[in-house]
Image (tube, rainbow, N blue to C red; front, side, top):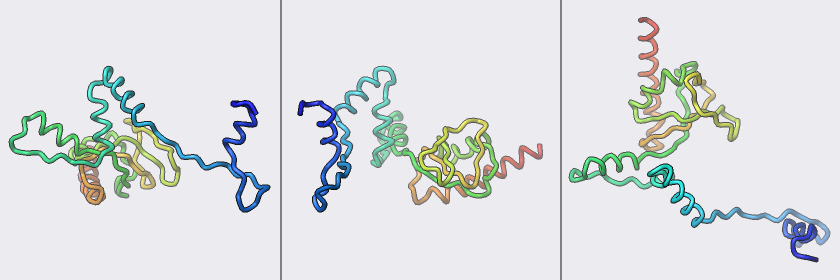
Length: 173
């Protein structure tokens, strides 16, 4: 067989089952991500968007640098920002029917930035939020936050109470 022929490619993609000689099974391959390619890509992108590699690294890593009283103002802000990460959370039922636009500022006041929504049970069907997006009881949210995963549901409940009180005040006015 010549290298690169169709038969050669077929052999690369399938194995013969060792227990049953006549059964061909798909070869299980793992996807390997080359760290060097990611690093070079991030370096190249930082030319167009300063700080992008730092932002991505901070969002993906779970390290939390501790602020000190002696830190310069910019260092303190960086350390607080570095504590933020992406989390998935469920909305309290009392937010059913509330527009994301109305909830955004109160969530921000509680240290939560809403990024996307997903209907429960629909794997990988995320929708970025828009001002016209509504929160439903069967919706999960992707948020950016500095809160611990365990504390997030309680903080979401407190934020929901504030959001509902604020929306009721606006409807009465």
